[in-house]
Image 1 (cartoon, rainbow, N blue to C red):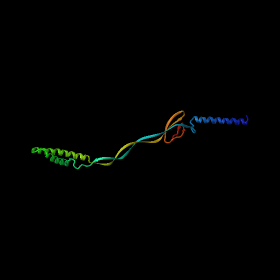
Image 2 (image 1 turned 90 degrees about the horizontal axis):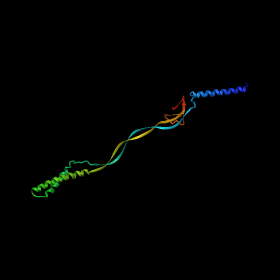
Image 3 (image 1 turned 45 degrees about the vertical axis):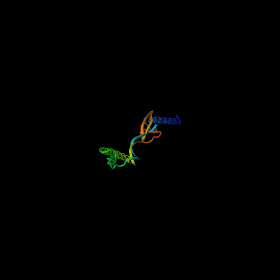
Image 4 (image 1 turned 30 degrees about the horizontal axis):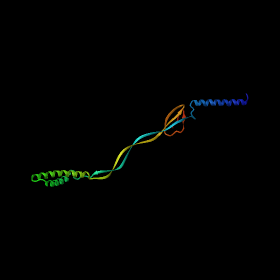
Amino acid sequence: MNNSATVALAVVGTLAVVGVGYAGFQALGGDADRYAEVVKVEPATKSYQEPEQRCEQVTVQRQKPVKDEHQIAGSAIGAVVGGVIGHQFGGGSGKDAATAAGAIAGGYAGNKTQEHMQKNNTYTTTEERCQTVMNTRTEKNGYNVTYRLDGQTHTVRMDDEPGDRLPVENGKVVTD
């Protein structure tokens, strides 16, 4: 055999051994250049309720403080006026009855008049009214990443967006 044939045979043999060795290495888990294909990336979120106090200025109408809550002044003035008017009617004992009836009616009317005036004695002011409302807050806390490896689809949670592919070591995706 000549030298060039021997060299050629040696080169071909060496390439064959290297190719078989590389194929065996890949078959046994040599993942140095393997990647899983990223199929979908979705932001993962967390929602929670947060209380917030909201206040506003409101115009309100209030009743002024009452000094004579039993309307004694109105009753007394009404009774006097009613008695004077009732005294103008009748004669003798009828005059006394008219005076008494006028005083009773005048006292009642004076009482109700003062009560009505007190209820309508109001003022307008501004008050602060507050209420607590619940706001929904949402924050991103990672990504749900779906990838394809060896014909199967898997999903994993990651802190950062991965890009188009994930590295594979020892037959598993590296997510760190």
